[in-house]
Image (cartoon, rainbow, N blue to C red; front, side):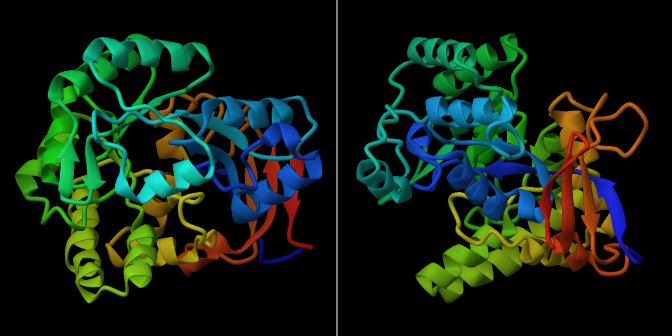
Length: 340
Ligand SMILES: [Zn+2]
């Protein structure tokens, strides 16, 4: 076997265990779940995924079935159900939630928010996700500041990271002020990120998940030229500014909300935003391992580490699209995906 390249196993820090093929996991066979997990994750080299909105009970059941060896799949970290305030259920998930009989209640008060954080962490959540800005029919609804602060503080008391869906500049402001750790998206609708804003994000140690493929999938869905322009003229420069300033970037694609599992487009956009091969590799490996507290055993190829590896069929140092040309995915020393 010549010309293959080995790296540490990849992390995808923005996924969702929401496709119907993953819901009602108690009714699914190991083969059914394993096949879906391969299609979405392991086939693309992901040995660890962070699910940032799903049904906690279902996601932790899948995790248990993987951990006990019955189902083949990646390491799963999860936030479970996301937090949104009164009237803040995003318009684009209402239909999906209803169709699948999923109830994610709106949080009515800071006390209720803090209580739900404690409950979800007790039930296995590894982090918390808030909708700092929710997309509604009449615009972006910003979460009340006291609610955001109460939720973030409670999560931090338990040592858990908080992700925010920002939507726009106000959502980013709320995220910074409430102490959020990770922005789950760039904000193509939110205007340019000034150097001052980027510096504040950095000073607050906020990490960024670009999700550039998502904006293209959405613009194709809406066939909106404006959206496409927002993507190219706004989101790409946001990532470029954040990256050039040395902000921490975590690879993430919103797989499970979008059905485009192929990661090659994201690598292309990241490189068009000026990210080097090394920076993209870090976003897949060392950055998330560090951010989520697993750097002592994950993210690098070294003695004593987890033996989570990806074997690529081409060299991403020459062409970043090679990050998606996965030949083998190895978790804890075992091949969990093989292209052959
Ligand atoms: Zn998402």
